[in-house]
Image (cartoon, rainbow over all chains, first blue to last red; front, side, top):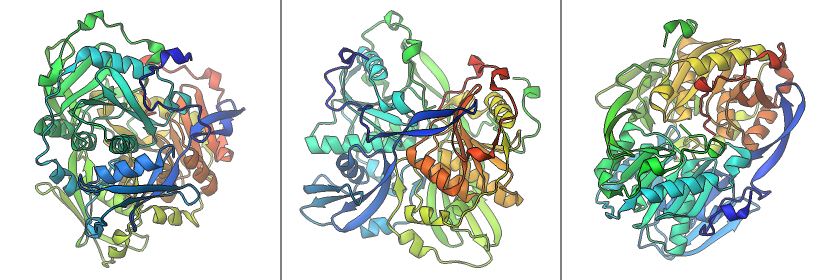
Length: 293
Length: 293
């Protein structure tokens, strides 16, 4: 695929050609013939905050430092006041240590026995909901022309998904430009890597849009809101609680984005319909990305 | 859809008409017109083992008792020796308590700070891998004609997925018959509900096949193996670690099942190719289920 199709505005784009992220595996096809396919890598990464072992994440392993930073941030273990002094990744022992100027004790948090399950990352549920109180998201307008352009570009960006399947992508965007496209075996990892990048770069959240291939579950909505991003969009569907929370925190929630169609179930007031959807081309079948519905 | 299309062999089939599982939500479409869509419910369910609070799971809420039982079993918190005396679901406080004859202390397990993330349910990672040692799966043969019939039937079964999207399904099958089709916002919940049903019914695992719409991640493979089921199949793709573990424990792992095609990357020896794939009809577009690739 010609590189000219890929926006040069990506700060980080998927790297499907990276040999470390996929592996060729040989098996048998339906005809009983030997076949070789590409499958995505998945490795454990143990994350430490100072001397405290926090979690082992299963990840494709492309941005361990961003994943660690973003995970800790999104879990509320790195506050706005915490100063990160260093992030060290040791490939041999598959460990990353995030160090802060002042060591805070998170032991009581870890001992808290409530954690979520069901394809929702092991966040402490009570903390998640509590962390939302007092969150206000900026009223940054979002033009529908931006959304259409973003979806169009993201669907055409060469990705591990297209190469090897079995993966979720989340893209941090600014207006009509995709900036940081992260992929991983779990969509929560992809979001955490973006949060880690934003923290590293000191990037603002108020003028950003988060686009994901995954379902708009309550946890996705909560993470987006806690990252301070006011707009979350996806090809996929919603859950009722995700919608409720989005309405509660005033997030703009757009789902079932395919071609010219979409549904907005929260934060409608940010939307500026600046183009006639009928003028938008129908989705090109070839580039139609399967929804993680 | 005519009920005649649905196999009468289902012990549990999806219940898309169940008003408790979906909700109508009103929003705006791309044309700025009001639109009403169906979205899947998602509620917290707090699971207790005796007096110990274990986890809060986000679930659609259809089988809280099975979810609790299966979750605890798959986490290794209910051993083969444990006798479950009662399972009590309290809808008002969204809690389910599983009681055993003898109370075992799991506090040290909960305090273990290693847990997985990245769209892998909060299992204790070290325990997961340890639990696999000594697992041997029976050499039950599996005919490809069964797999084709299963996929065909499952894809045509009315489901929440078809109704409202944003959901994962996993089906426990026996030979060419789908038995228990569970759906949930997280595929790990769907698997746990099946494990709970099997425990309740005292159902054998050795002659079963697990079919899922989700990706064949390491955690899916581990759960299947620990449930004693020797065959795991999916429309979706693989991860390298999932393949490795399947090969290690001797599980038959079949992915990318679409129409007549599939790829088997582990446990090939169980496969009995008893039909000519060319004789299989190509997938009917109308019923083509999107892969959670």
